[in-house]
Amino acid sequence: MARLKPKSFLIPVLFFCVAFSIQNLNAQVFVSPATGGNRSADAPGFYYALPRTVVKVDVILEKNERFKGPYSEFTGRILGVDDFVKQNETVYTIIDIIVSSISEPDPQAWYFVEFDERGSRDARSLIFELQENGLILGADDAVRGRSQMGLKVEKTFVNTPDEKRFQYFAERNLYQRIDTIKRNITIDTTVIRRNILQSAWVDRNPEQKARAAADMIHKIRESRFNLISGFQEVNFGSGLPYMDQQLQTLEEEYLSLFLGKEVRSIVEHTVYYYPDKESKGIQPLARFTEKEGIIEGNVKGEQIQIVIEPLNLTSRLADDHKNTGRSRLNNNMYYRVPDMADISILFRGKNMARERFGIGQLGVISVAPLSKTRLLFDPNTGMISTIKRE
Image (cartoon, helix red, strand yellow):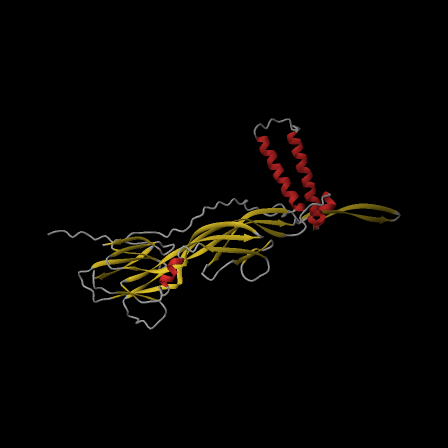
């Protein structure tokens, strides 16, 4: 007996496939807009979508946090310094803006593909390939795995490491107080005086803590001086710079209890914009404030604006396809012809970024044949990338 070989199964990751039989000449495949009409619930078929282009704006901010030291109120009196952080505050500054694009299903461009089950069994098998979000990838007789490729921008952020705030503020709160009690003992005409020492642990007040921290700063500086002047008369060799650096770091930590701390970091805020044919001229994108950074919505702040300038490369096609995208097709399917546009981001009257790329919804929707045709689509724009006629 011949041994049956196990069949291999394809497990697609980024797309799924819908296969059906279609006659080369007389089969019927109907494609109609998904308008929420009275379509039968048991109608054989599936939905697919055309992509729309979303403008992704990454605003790179520098975040400057200033923290008041716990002994700041004693800084002028104990250290004699006037330049220190007097209140907690956060200040944002825009340092760069990056423009790119992503694709997602267009809610206005969903279509239903309905199969004609009366087709012949001898017809070839046609496979539709879709992404997991419903975007059409192709109508072909071979499965090809393709991932969605967008406009990629490489970004590198250099952040300051997370710092502990005032790590030497948590010190011993109690100190030992010794009181001398004088007691007079009278025996007849003799008076005896006795001194009695009484000790107790009491809380330090904030000024006492501040003075203890100032004394520690003085000790650290004295230790550094003795170290680098050779007072110990010991050859520390290569360890001398390390010890000096550690003492200097310790001094800065104690000084921060009076002067405060300033921490700078780089943060990113992403804003998405959905272009359409009605968006003309300068459009609001988001608002910026130094205290809160990027704020979306109708709030107070400096306006960040976006300008989309279509190149109108598909203007000649618009008149030829006025009703395309709203009709029921037979053995045809809808695809998108994108237009190109220049995208600019304005802030404080300055052009912060400018890019040019294709935007699907600014173009037109057209029709491609299915009979005896293999189609592959660009998942970013919906445009046909490959077409082969049999």
